[in-house]
Length: 137
Image (cartoon, rainbow, N blue to C red):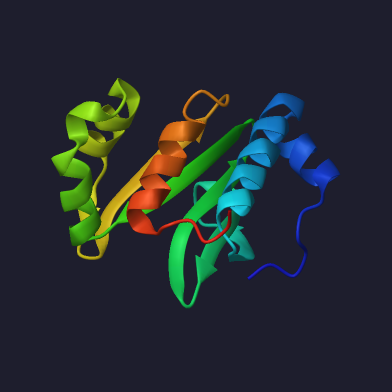
């Protein structure tokens, strides 16, 4: 856990203004659909910051930030993978390719997307809906 939560200026300095705007917009969309707690952490070896959304001990997703880059991660367990695979052809090419390329571990398939704009936000929210129904209207 971080002692200091990054403020807007720190994130803008790290990722740049345009990516900060993408980060902020996607955070707002997640928070509009889901009443979640979020926790700031260091981002491990590859990222400076992690903003993890969870509720009741279950993680929904996480956003990541590093120099000039932001990421979105969602992890699908076995049931969620089955749900996705039943409708795989309906997903955009980018989502299908990332799903196929993502590593499957004992605890699930870890899908990391680098965000550059808002073009896949609808797909990302649909992925989250496989994990958990939105609990906000």
